[in-house]
Structures are given as structure tokens and as C-alpha cells.
Length: 436
Ligand SMILES: Cc1cc2nc3c(=O)[nH]c(=O)nc-3n(C[C@H](O)[C@H](O)[C@H](O)COP(=O)(O)OP(=O)(O)OC[C@H]3O[C@@H](n4cnc5c(N)ncnc54)[C@H](O)[C@@H]3O)c2cc1C
Image (tube, rainbow, N blue to C red; front, side, top):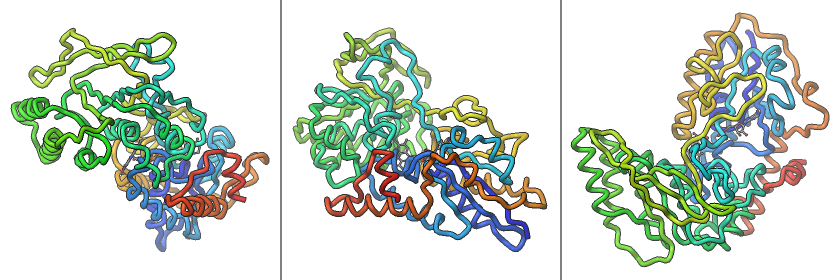
């Protein structure tokens, strides 16, 4: 019976769900030997560096990932970057299949004047900063002004706005990166605007996230009843109200009707607001918005503008994949057909394949669909057995599953003493030391 060797690149949800789908597809006809490669010494992708620290339940999916990793046919090669430490061609020549699960980590640009001023950040920088991604530990996040603007109408924008707007004591019992938490404690930001170019009826926020907003203990969340009613009327007239939108509109109504507590901290939604320009002398000081209107279901620029004085702007308008040597990208994702990279033994799953959409579970069904195709394509004979370790440059300290377990346990133990689920280490050097 052939044992096929599969390389999975990226230890995020797509990577682990691919490994799980392969494990579940073993039978009397075939087995799999899985090698997973991850560029960081820490695992779990955006479950560690994306999901908001005040949403700890979502991160319990990591238990599933660790179960997958504990199977005897699974080997981990952490701290190994594919395309840099090992060429893709090298993997394709030796493994029966290579599955790219490398995600989508570069923030999309608005393409407006002033976007590169200091004080203008992407969610793709701000989120990994507060979540302890080593690449962003040194990011300069100016928190000495009173006002921030978050641009975007999806859950990532909501996470950014919430982290800026809540009282940092609410983050003390979480795994927020220690250096970011210290900065957030000193933050003078009290007003956070969150701006979307269309109406509330078209925002991509999901209902559970909206329903959590009135529960914030130290922050008033503002949207006017008139705005919610207008959105309802437009959606009704356009015949757009289905189950999800009805639930969102109801959540908006609850936010609008929630009594204000007079908190100093506020999060205020602005809709039909299209950013035109960031102005400032050497740093962001003002955001200019064009006012949109909706006519016959279409968003139209009225030509009118207004400005908000702000000291920090975060754009959360989507992600695209980071380049990887030897891989072709198209419109921000790996060029693929239903997960197959045509003409190769490369496959792709997750955000690298589909772009930045869907929840963690979406990657599970995606992985299972692509693994079916991968199995269809397998040759009768597996490739000869081999060990990839000698192909990894000598200077690279591999974080194998045992080393990752030590890092994980050390962080959890350090957090326990402080009443946190874990205390994240953000230095690569120190992480590697913890793994020894
Ligand atoms: C801010 C934010 C909050 C979110 N919150 C939620 C939530 O609350 N609930 C929910 O269900 N979903 C949430 N999501 C969505 C969820 O995180 C994604 O669906 C999921 O992480 C995508 O999985 P992935 O494996 O495709 O990518 P990722 O999770 O990004 O994993 C990709 C992995 O590949 C590694 N990698 C990249 N390049 C290389 C390389 N060349 N060599 C080796 N390794 C490499 C990366 O380091 C990373 O570990 C959130 C997303 C974001 C951005």
C-alpha cells in the first residue's frame, strides 16, 4: 500500500484542516506522511495573530490543531520559511503533493493621498501588533491623541475599533501582547470612529459581533436610530432583507436604542462615508470623507465632503497574499482552479486560495474539498521515501512539535501566574530559546 508524502506550507487553520482531511482519508488503499512547514516559531496562524484577544473561546479550535499534530504521521518544521529557506521546486520534486496554506497577510491599500503619512496604519499591521506577531512587535502605534478613525465595515475593522475603544483593563485578563497592552494602558484615545462607504444594510459585520457591542462595560457605541431606520427602509425597498440581514438590522436597532451611559470612551459608526484624503503636517491629523448616498441600490458620491480630526487611522479594507518565490499570484491569491495549481503537484487551501473571506470553519470544508481533488490526482506509486531535514539550511533552528509544545507550555505557564490564558513571547530569539 503506498504511503504518499505531503508537504503542507503554513500552520494556520487551512494547514491543520488539510492535515486532518488527509488523516481522515487514510484507508486500505493509501496512507499519508505529512510534513508541515511554518515560517514562525509559533503555530496556529491567525488563530494566534488575528483573532481578537477578548474573544478567547474562538481560539479553543487550537485544541483540534494540536490533536491533528499529535498523530504519528505528522511532523512539524516550524521556523522554516518556504521560498526562502527551501525552494518550492525542491519540495515539488520530492513530495507527492505540496499544499500552500500560507494565508493572506498584506493589507490592501485605499490608494488615496496621505495614506503613507505616519499615523496611518493597516489592520494587517495593527492586529498582529496587539496579538504579539514577532514581525510587528516594534510597530509605532501613535496613541497619544484622543481620536482614531478605523476605515472598513467588516469584523476586522470592528476588532481594531473595539481594541482601541475599550478600557484596557478589559484586556488585562487576555493574551494581548504584553508590549501592546502596556501601550494601550497609556493610550489617550477616547473616541473611535468606524467608517464604511456604504450603508449599515451592506456592512460585512456579522450579527454576533454587533450584538456584543451594547455589552461593552466602559464604552458607549453610537449609531442614530434615523440611520438604522433609513437602512431598513432602503433594504426593504430593494427586497434585500433575508435572514442574515434581518438579524443584522435587528442588532443595529438594539445598538441605537441602547441607553448611553455617558462614558468618556466612545465608538461611533459613520456610514456612506468614503475616505478621500488623509491630511497632516508630517503625520495624520485629519481624514477627509466624501459623502455617499444610495440611489436605486447604487452608491453615489454626492460631491460633498466632511472632515474628522484624527491622530491615528487604521485601514481595514481587506488583505492580499504576500509574494512567495516560485508561486504565481493573481488578484491577491495563488493562481488556482478550485485549489489545483494547474500543471504542477501544488494545491492551495484557505485564504491563500480564496482570499480573505470566511470564518475559521470555512477552511475546514475548503480543505476537505481540495484534499478530494488531491487524492484523485495521486499516481498509483508514491514517490521514494526521504527526509527533508538535510535540505534545510544548517543555520535554521527547526521548531519541531516537541519544541513548539515547550514554547506553548512556557507561555501558558507564564500567563497562569498573571491570570491570563498565556503570556505571549514576541521575540523570535526568545521563542527559539523557550523551544530548546
Ligand atoms: C483580524 C482577524 C480576526 C479574525 N477573527 C476571526 C474570528 O473571530 N472568528 C473566525 O472564525 N475567524 C476569524 N478570522 C478569520 C480566520 O482567522 C481565517 O479564516 C483563517 O485564519 C485563515 O486561515 P489560513 O490558514 O488560510 O491563513 P492564516 O491563518 O493566515 O495562516 C497562514 C500561515 O502560513 C504561514 N506562512 C505564510 N507564508 C509562509 C511561508 N512562505 N512558509 C511557511 N509558512 C508560511 C503564516 O505564518 C501563517 O501561520 C479573523 C481574521 C482576521 C484577519
